[in-house]
Amino acid sequence: MAQVLEFKLPDLGEGLTEAEIVRWLVQVGDVVAVDQPVVEVETAKAMVEVPCPYGGVVTARFGEEGTELPVGAPLLTVAVGAPVAGGPEGSSGAAQGPDPAGQAEGSGNVLVGYGTSEAPKRRRRVRPAAPTAPAAAAAPARPAVPAGATGGAVNGGVSAVVAERAFADTTPLAAEPVGGHGPVPVISPLVRRLARENGLDLRKLHGSGPDGLILRADVEQALRAATAGAATSPAAPTAAAQPAALSAGAGVPAAVPARAEGVSGTRVPLRGVRGAVADKLSRSRREIPDATCWVDADATELMNARAAINAAGGPKISLLALLARICTAALARFPELNSTVDLEAREIVRLDQVHLGFAAQTERGLVVPVVRDAHARDAESLSAEFARLTEAARTGTLTPAQLTGGTFTLNNYGVFGVDGSTPIINHPEAAMLGVGRIVPKPWVHQGELAVRQVVQLSLTFDHRVCDGGTAGGFLRYVADCVEQPAVLLRTL
Image (cartoon, rainbow, N blue to C red):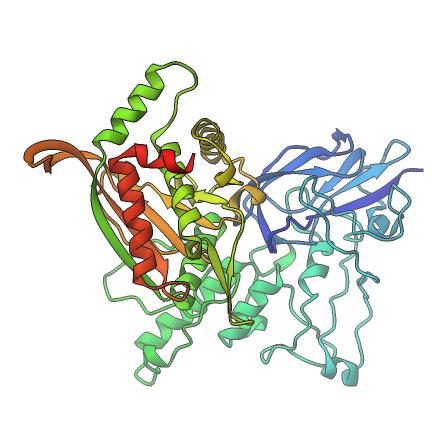
């Protein structure tokens, strides 16, 4: 007899707690092998194909494409062992079966290359019986499973198993009933928290999801309607009195501001890469007292050196690779800028390795791939690694490990046709070197006015790790290497 196992959204590592289903790679009824990719998800870090740790027949899928699921929510069920003749029936006991490897511990949420989360000691089950009034007053009850929903899943929809996880957040809501009624069905704890923070009574909403399940869109629409009604009421409180905090992780404003009369607009959810960028930049601005210094440099000799290197044959060397090599040499002289600040210990941690991040603009937004051990690479190795990571960024195949762990960032915003910028530091790093476009400009060269290839270099740094003298020394050394590449020979 076939055993039906439940595969949950695995721990993707790097502190990620949710992912959005981009594309299903299997259908119900398909036969899958162990570690075969079954779904493509987008996290705040990257696009990832998730492999299934079980081999067998897919009996159910949970969530439509575009649905955002928390880590630990079910993705699909797989019948292993004997062939399945009756489809998804019997999958209600899937998650209670033993691990195929015979291990009692471990979640089974294995994503190859990303680790696994620790298995919970006990699973919560759906209890159809309503609690007594005293028990319900202490904690909201879980809903009974509708007839026919046990173990089943709507293909591309949300089943009772998903709803079970949605009720894992048992913090009582002020608007939720007590007694024998239980909480209303909500797709995720994030949506429940969004309603709670805005004082929204979920009992008054009719969910647009399967079986009346309340979705995030339903809560957002109710908040907009409530705000619009408050704006037209004479006794309505002012906008300043409305809650204005962001619902953590929800990616939407906790309070929707009233719209000006005759003004319309489009709402873009802050999630995925865009949401991660917003969170990180906001944190950087809150925590890091940054300062910026800049200098113009004559890059003519650097451009000539690159042309001579590439004319000599062999793999082509990119300008970004030469700038990266200059950065690593400068960081060896000024290690204060290759550091991070430990606020709890009130210490500056100077790092031994240089993991160089570089800003890359993609269709999915701004990402910062990281070149590991850049200090140990030559220009040819750096060129190859930049090319590989840039292609992965373009195709959306960067892994979370390739987007984290940087110690210093090189930002070539000159590709956008601009000369200068004051970028925000990539938290928790301590500095970022910005490079503007290289353009012909009048320049005094060897005592005479000439047309030279000029670039503006800027350094944004954390003023806690060093003073302006150190930052200025770093930037001046970089400019000297750009103007006279032979300076680099001292460190090669």
